[in-house]
Length: 202
Image (cartoon, rainbow, N blue to C red; front, side, top):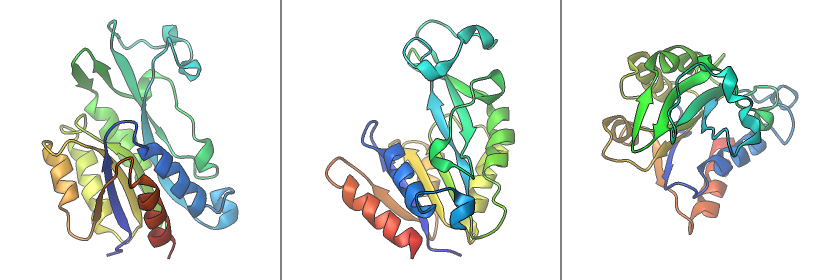
């Protein structure tokens, strides 16, 4: 099993997604993955506020009921040919859930279909990126099985997760044999980024 499996946790706004993008830039050699000969797969999840985010498109195209104060969370794949150019796919099929107002709703089927699809690497040299794991996935059984399948594989893995050690799935990933678990904060984030890049490229 590859030892290049990094599980990073941090509070909000510390820079988890920034770390992912810097790793992707280093992995692909600052160009397309195909040209650099470095393959990558995986996904981002992102909350979209239609009132504030210009990328959100037209909320009238979304048929999923969204109550005031709640926001859709979309899953979208990392573009294997242009990882840093990956953009959210704004439609009902890519909504993994809704958050806000102190509670959340999860569409487990999307995790169990698209989530599993996006994490299916073509070979063992492909870097698998998951940004991020949190509390919404607890009922997505196929998706959870896929995560642990990945952690058992020979693929290099970069998995970002919420700072919620009260969640069973997060604790299981943290304690999984062979992973390097790192708590990132504002003081060590540059050091953590350099370490992950150096180790994942060696």
